[in-house]
Length: 106
Image (cartoon, rainbow, N blue to C red; front, side, top):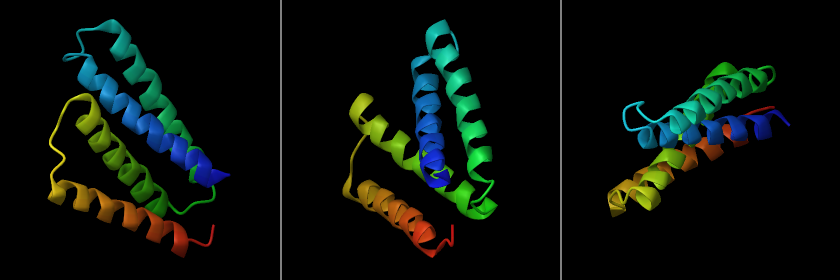
């Protein structure tokens, strides 16, 4: 269950980053509100997941999910480049997340 909580913490991590982009420098109140709620939820969910998942593993997975999610969102929402090297790099991060999950005893 804590791995699912950690996954949703990563989703919230992506959500606040995308909302921050839409906030236009924190000048639009709705995206700023989403940033505040999603950022809080992300950190709280991370803390809950760390009850059973080791700190280093939880933090690496949380940030990795945030990196992958925001990069993919950037490609689809903001037309950022999807170069081969960029996609390979994201795939390597994903492999690292899977590796951490597979070697975790929790």
